[in-house]
Image (cartoon, rainbow, N blue to C red; front, side, top):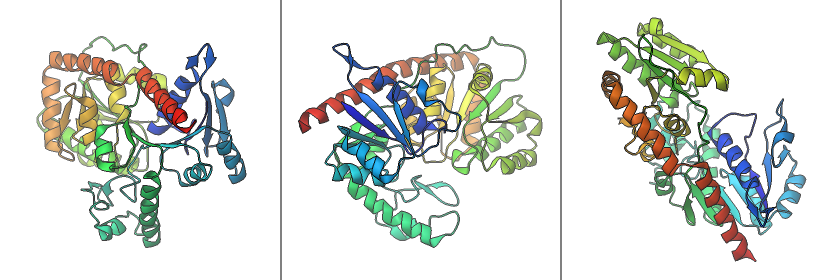
Length: 388
């Protein structure tokens, strides 16, 4: 079966969707039937290779094809799988009468910005588009560009219409399925690569270490984390706050940390390679994911659960679903609540360790790579058989 898997962004680009697409493509390429590969996978992407070597991958990668080449690839494929509602390959797949699957990594079919956040304040949106409050959607732009607002607003209608006329819509959480409300829905949780090589460092003397990992953008809620850290410092607590990642808000966040007198206990590490990230996380007492919105699964939540680390996340629907009872949540944007949850965790290391064990087991039970691959393979077979 020839599968065209379209992902606008792909390696060497780094992100949640890119990670899932790469993991899934690797796994599907390994599926065999009667000792033969069952699926021939072609990744189509608009991301240039840069220094990335596509030849090391067990599938074909086609980068930045023209419209004619893309049409040829779609016509020669048995099934089209899109990582997000990309319009051009979506329309070409329908014109080619191919079964089209869309795996949703955002809110593009119910929110013009795809984030479900009210900009520029980064306040969680209650769902204005689906409620018909379109004037609110048109005002929701951080740059004040009305033409861009109208374009995104109109494209949301187009995407929603097209996604209502395909073979399957996939979401990684029941939460996302519930808010998108599209037909032919399948919930297939993301699968996490095993963290078998990860080992937590033995406890050493020194303050506990709180880690944030992600892009330094307003929607990730880092200001809330800094304000919570300020509250903990006012309580005379000793700790070290490490922020892994970079982004456009870094300078402003560093200035905010100075204003809160946190410079002595806060380190902005920027982008680190995988070995450096693992080294820091091995010393972590807790990982905080304070996002304000825009989250459909929470890969950083699940990955750190897989490491056996206690995770504290904002109580967004996707995060609550992934964490279950194996982590802590706090009210979105509430620094006082976050400080309270962090303080409780830092005060009870035995409880923190138990949470880490429970988190690791939950990932094994609910978010395995093998289960994700098997569920996609089964869906492909069903759609292929129904077409035949």
